[in-house]
Length: 66
Image (cartoon, rainbow, N blue to C red; front, side):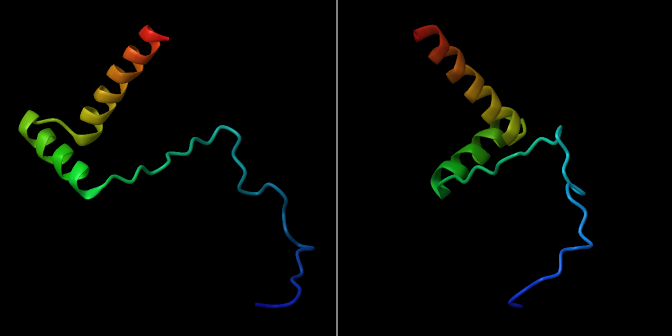
């Protein structure tokens, strides 16, 4: 790595997108992931659809209790 870099020709904000949405990865334990994949195959739905449904149900329960 150099001690100093010349950034005088750089363009500020060149790749900045204020409306960009970031999808954060979620890392699951192997046993949880295996269960979800197996259950999704059994129900013949995508893993994303299954997990989003579970999370929406939990959100509804949390909101009803709070």
